Amino acid sequence: MKPGKEGYRVAVVGASSLLGKELVTVLEEEKFPISRLVTFDTDEDEPEIPIIDLREASKISVEDRDVSEAELDFAFLAARPRELPAFLRSWQEHRGAAHCLVIDLVGEGLGAGASGAAGDHPGGVASAAHEVQVPFLDRRFPAGAPESAGAAIHVSAHPAVIVISALLLRLAARFPLQTAVAQVFGSASESGSRGIEELQKQTVNLLSFQKIPRQIFGAQLAFNLLSRLGRAATGEMASLEARLRRQLHAYLGERVPRPALRLFQVPVFYSLGVSLYVKTAEPVAPEAAAVALAGERVRVRRSAQDAPTQVEVTGSSDILVDSMSSDAEHPTGLWLWAVADDLRLAATNAVELAASLRERARA
Image 1 (tube, rainbow, N blue to C red):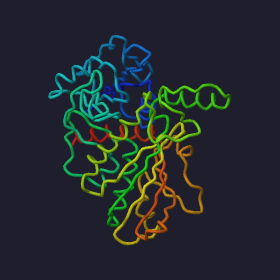
Image 2: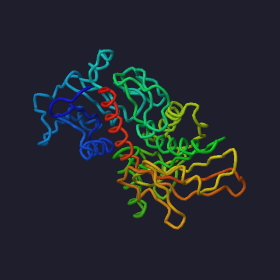
Image 3: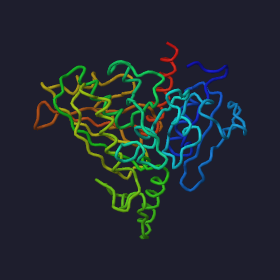
Image 4: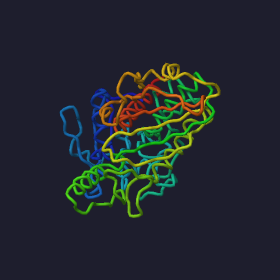
């Protein structure tokens, strides 16, 4: 795929979501060559209509409101649409000869629901062959022959999957791993702006002794921790845990022991934390493990420094890892703590994936 004289024609579905806004920001900061940017709002309280980007850098016009699939080069899915925009319905019908490359940040196939089956979500598109991709890891740890740049759907890995995979693959490259256990501490941002708003209202209302809203989380999250959401919840926690398991299985394959996984909802507005326990074949000094982990996108703290926090990492594309410690009762066990800005890391990975697809097509 070659860009036009002024760049690629790009669509962002869910541009008004937290993830969509971060994606547009990263596209700009990374100077991804764009000649047209069409954004589609998927807010449940707003009609499903495209919002046309009228920045000076954008060459799109009002006549392009009904943009077709053939007029686009990339489409980023930053939210699950209730109804597919016309260009995606056309893509579904003709994806065998589709021009537009679809990069999915929110699932495994357009409209994939909690079970992971295509079409579970209203307006869903049958999932085509795809693979979970993390470009900065794929360069060092290729899983096999790269997927064709013309494939139907390219799944950008969830940030928790990126963090866990980066840690396990780098450790396994130096030390034989036997088992792994991962605990993911998800923030309210995983449920979008409504999750952020509900956590904020819960916090304020609790401090003023008022009734708290529970629509998103189904229970009190403020000053609390949830191992699962309440029955009335509309948040993403249950489907997210299943999605993380599927993506880890798809991405890691048999390269490393797939970790046992639990997801927890914590009263944090942004960013995620991962507590990872690994058991190696032979005892490994924490200092040696730190050397194995450090590299592109991963920064390891020394014990003399403060532990990294979910607040601190907000706005960064890096994965911050605390100084490691051996398990007191198990000489071959290591504990790791890592944090990452979920929105920033997801958006950065998607833009890097688009750039890698562009390079593959040129080769």
